[in-house]
Amino acid sequence: MVTLPELKQVFDNLDEGIVFIDQDRRIVAINEAASRMLGQDRDAILNKLCPTLFQGTDCARDCEKSDHCTLMVETKQERKFQDLVVRRPDGALVQMRMWAIVLPSKGPSKHCAVVLRGTNW
Image 1 (tube, rainbow, N blue to C red):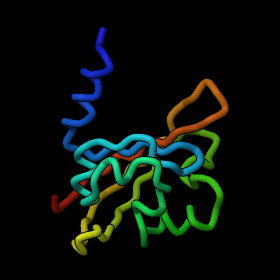
Image 2 (image 1 turned 90 degrees about the vertical axis):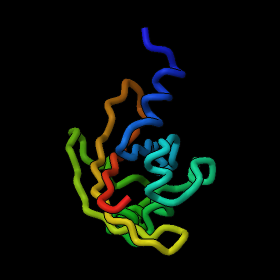
Image 3 (image 1 turned 180 degrees about the vertical axis):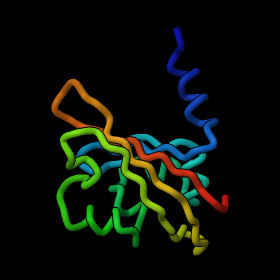
Image 4 (image 1 turned 45 degrees about the vertical axis):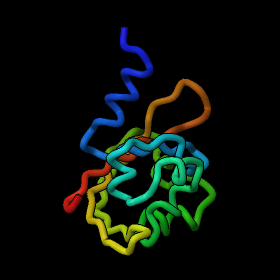
């Protein structure tokens, strides 16, 4: 059986950035690759609202107009791709493709996994 520390090691050693978002749009987990791509410390990102992480993108603008994650609106699980350009805190522009996946849940709360693949990191 795989242990939680082993899973965390895999999570942090992926080349793709992974961000987990809850239904209230809070970032509940982020791996090292996403932290590097976005140019921010992981601890500074956790518990922030997702739109603050992806400022200026269509996804963030849609989310800011709503009180919930717009990626989780559909009743069926869909793959949602977006090409993004995000300005990091250091001013650098980062191009990436975002793939959002609504994760199945047994309870009433939903989570979304956002997979990021950068083109210039």
